[in-house]
Image (cartoon, rainbow, N blue to C red; front, side, top):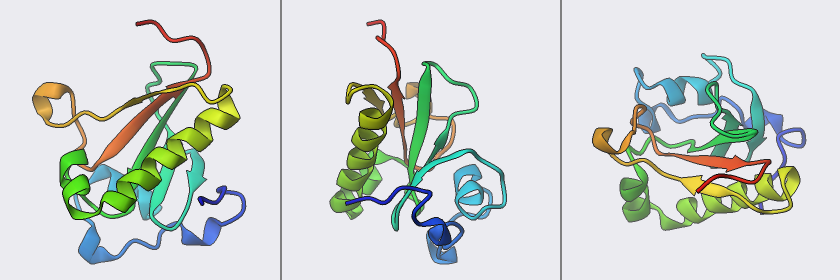
Amino acid sequence: MTENIQDKKETRGQVNSADSQEDCLFCKIIAGQVPSRAIYENETTYAFADINPKAKVHVLVVSKKHYRNVYELAQANPAELVDMINVAQTIADKEYHGHFRLEFNTGEDAGQSVFHVHAHVLTGEKLEE
């Protein structure tokens, strides 16, 4: 089970340099080099508020290890992908009675702008189709 950010702050910044890319924005956020508004964190996953929200609650859930996209993560470590989904559910349970939209953009043509696997958790209100 995952742990709330308030319960386990010491994991922040503990990114193995072999698992990160020095020019990756999300690797810098995980390492604490770029500020973010932490929502949730556990040993493998970090969640923070999106700076350009598309819903009342818009959280990015990222793997602490650098994978370019969800397919790469699924091939390398499916259990970590399951953990990301569990974190999304935990956020939705807290923010909007468990209902949420989960989006992974894979590739530039699909809208991926940061090439570090991340899920968009959209919740907090009834979402449009």
